[in-house]
Every structure is written in C-alpha cells, then in structure tokens.
Amino acid sequence: MEPVFTLSIGDMPLLSHYMEEISMPKIETSKKQKKSVTKSLKAYEPFKSKELNDAKLVIETLLGCIKTGDLESFREVLVAHLMTVNKMHLAARAGIGRRTLYDLIEPKKKFNPELSTVSAVIKALAA
Image (cartoon, rainbow, N blue to C red; front, side, top):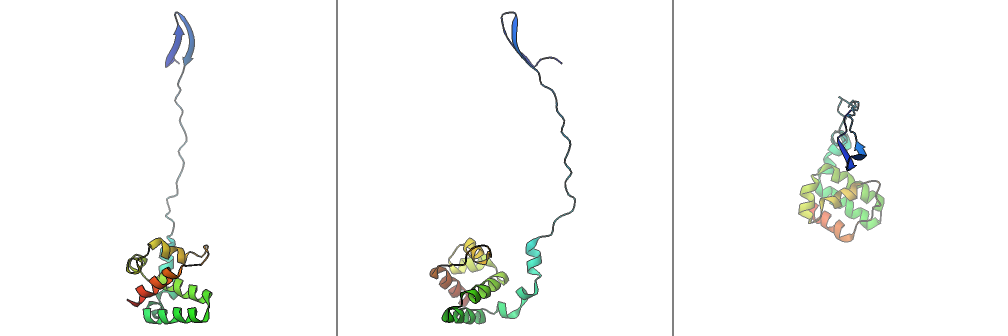
C-alpha cells in the first residue's frame, strides 16, 4: 500500500498517512409498510356518530358540563367532537393555533385550557 501523503523534513520522513477502503455491510430494511394510526382512528365507529357531528348538541353538552363543573365529561365530549372535525378549519374559525387543538386532544397532557381557548372553540362551533 502506498502512502497518501508523507510529511518529511529534508530527506527524512516523519509521518506517512495511509488510507484503506472499508466496506460496510448493508443493513436490511423492512419491505412491509406500517399501518397508519390516523387511518385506524378514522375507522373507529364512535367518531362517525351523528351526535358528535351535530355542533348544536355538542355546544349544549359542553355548556351543561361547564354549568355542573364536570371537567372530565367536558374534556371527553370536546375531544370526541374534535376527532370528527377538520382541526385546521376549526382552528382558523376560532382564531387559535391548530397545535392548541391538538394539545387539547393529547391524553398525556394535563387538560387545563384557558377560558379564551374554550370560548373561542365554542364560538367557532356555533358559527
């Protein structure tokens, strides 16, 4: 093997650098595509119910939950309804960020929306 470069002073070599070609084995990738989570959610029957698509009924239920102070039911109804609607259009009508709606849906996050967010969503549903 010949050196790629040699550092020398005068006729005396100090350092020679050799490069060798290294071949790495190829990693096999899966040929099978994984199922999308969102497709399975769209096929989930409760999200196709007529009641969840009825904005007036959802608003009445949400306001009833607020009157009784039932935050858990409020979240369940709101999340179920948000799963049935186009979040981008609802966020635009409500004047809030789409990420805010996704944060309301996220089960791992603490559910503590601001009053302005709740009122904006309810106004957008009523429109």
